[in-house]
Length: 110
Image 1: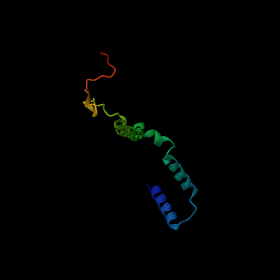
Image 2: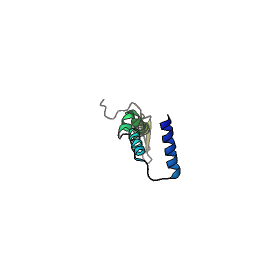
Image 3: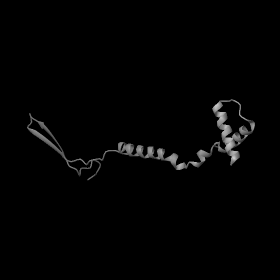
């Protein structure tokens, strides 16, 4: 315990005096301790679950789907109600009336 206390006092004295030279024994101990604390490359990416990276992309795809699907859908085809067309030939006193009903089929043969 006293060795650690002496080391702490020596480090504090060196810091207070703003000396540039660090004793070689202390420097090697500090570098060895710092080497153990240094983060290793690639570990932080490997620790992160893959699904955390996929959440924003899945949300963007769902949002695009919810917006684009209704916009790309064709409007429903409504059946023809009734179409009434009238022609009148006044000099011959003739009136022609065409009525197209919903059950009319142009390509149906009688």
